[in-house]
Image 1 (cartoon, rainbow, N blue to C red):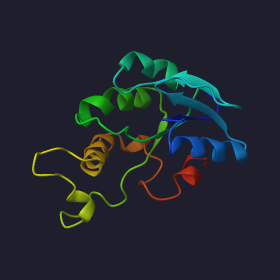
Image 2: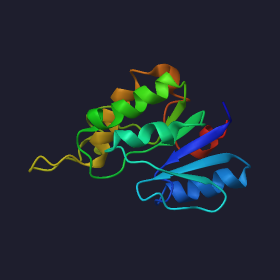
Image 3: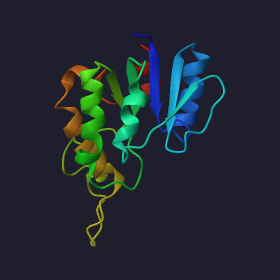
Image 4: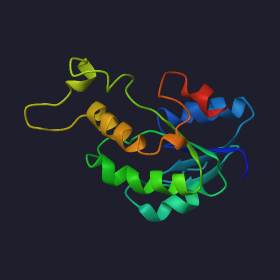
Length: 154
């Protein structure tokens, strides 16, 4: 398998500078986005967690993936599990961006982000995602932490 990093959300606020940083380090990058926007110097591919048919093409030819959750999804387990299982079957390592320490304890302000109407905010979704990923410990490069671009390029 080639040494290529799949960056999910590659054209977004986090993904675009990550792709640029990885390219500057000489890494081979495959850029995935819902709109399949083209980026200079990288292979582009369509990907949407809500469309499982995009998973196989996105994972083709990569050995690592940088994953973060898009905002607005509430059923994290059902959303992530097909992608994580597909990565596991291909032995693709995952670097997952999360709210640092979201699982630390209930007093952590990042765990207190719900509202009276019951709307789930991003940090609790990150916690749910971490719980899904822990089912596949062999896939994880490391515990999520700042500097994920350094992790992904190892």
